[in-house]
Image (cartoon, rainbow, N blue to C red):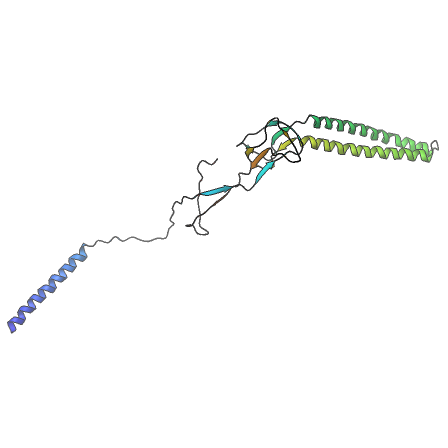
Length: 227
C-alpha cells in the first residue's frame, strides 16, 4: 500500500511540473508593444456637393430711353462700383445742357445789371426825380430776374443729371454675369428694359450638407477651378 501511494505521488508531481513549464513557455512567447497615448487632432477629408450663393444680384436698366451706342464690358468681366458699363446716345441731352448753360448765363447777366442799376434808381428816388411807383416796379422786375436765375440754375442741374443718366454705371463691385441687351438696341424706361446682370463675388456664401461635422468644428474647404 505504501509503495503504491508513493508511486502515484511521483506521477502527479511530474504532471504538475510539466504543466507549469508549458504555461511558462506560452507566456514567454507573447511579445506586447506598449505605446504612450497623447491627446491630438485627427483630420479627414470629406467630399461634398454644395452651392455658392452671391449676396447680391443686380439687374441694370436704363434711367433714360435711348439707343445703346457702347457696351464697355463683356460677360465674365470684373467691374468696380461707379465704373461706366453702358453708354446711351446722348446727343439730345448734350444739347439740352448747352441750352441750359446759355439761359443761366443770360439770367446771371440780367441780375448783375440790376445790382449795378438799383443803387442809381434809389438815389433818383431820394432826389425826387422818379416816383415811388417807378422804383417799386423796378425792384419787382429785379426780383423776377433773380427768380429766373434760380430757375435757370435748376434747369441746368436737371440737364446735367439727364446727361449723366445716359451712362449706366455699376452700383457694386462684382462680375458681369449676363449681357442681355445688344449694341444698337433701343431700350425703354417704362416698361424697364434689362441691359446687364451683375453678381457680387466677395464674399460668397457656400452651403452644403455635412453629417459628420459637429457645430464649432474648424473646416478647411477648397473649390477647384474657381476664379
